[in-house]
Amino acid sequence: MTIDRVLSTLRARLDLEAEDEHEVLEEVRAHLEAAVDEARARGLDEAAALAQAAARFGVEECAQELQATHAGWGTLEGVAAAALPVLLALALRWLVFAPDGTTVHWQEMLNRPAVWAIAAIALLLPLLRFPRRRYALVSWAIFWGLSVLVIAGQAVHW
Amino acid sequence: MGEPGDRGRQMEQMRKGTTTLAVLKLLAETDEPLHGYQLIRELEARSQGFFQFKEGLIYPRLHQMEREGLLQSHWEGAPGSRRRKVYTITDKGRRRLEAELREWETFNQGMRLLLGTERARS
Image (cartoon, rainbow over all chains, first blue to last red; front, side, top):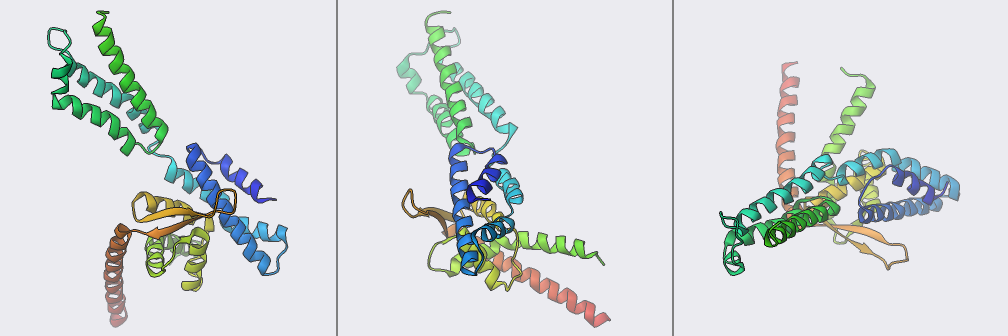
């Protein structure tokens, strides 16, 4: 048994963002190293010290709790990441286009506080509220992609 | 009333419920940031063995407390060398500590009154 083996066992039970996983594993490594050092100072050999440290650490229990803490909203996060930008893009569409389907002049558009509000919500809400960054990025991509598609599409009279 | 296993699980639940309070109290009293291993050892020593659980379970709790703004962390040590993530209590954490200590005292007082009443009747 090695510390790397213990960390591999832990890693196999986690499904986290890469950055979170790296930090968690580095923190656990530091813990195990400190525990081994302390056990060796008490007279245990390397193998016994590591076995004791791993047993006291509780890899299975820790993995379960870490996953629950870092997993975010689960499926709901994916749904929100897709639904939010669609709703915001629809709202933006109604602000950008006049009732007769023509595009509002860009100066008039920028004078509408609702446009700024929607842009701010689309930018900040995923960043501040989504536990996992990749869902925030997906939300941004969908929103801005839809916005460009709707506005550009209308502009070329699809 | 309960089997030994039941009492063990009850004690485990009580420990889980008080870990946040214990961690906040410890960090509020120390002048230096502490990493997870130090926290575990200090909790065990100060509680004279009462706070003794699977050591890895401290980390999900610390991470959750950091997300709630009760703690903040930073890494000590240069990249490539042995680095440790250390934690300090925030102002929000200190306010939570005060609130939980008040709640704990109220709970304790209630239990003392209750248990005192039980002994008086018998």
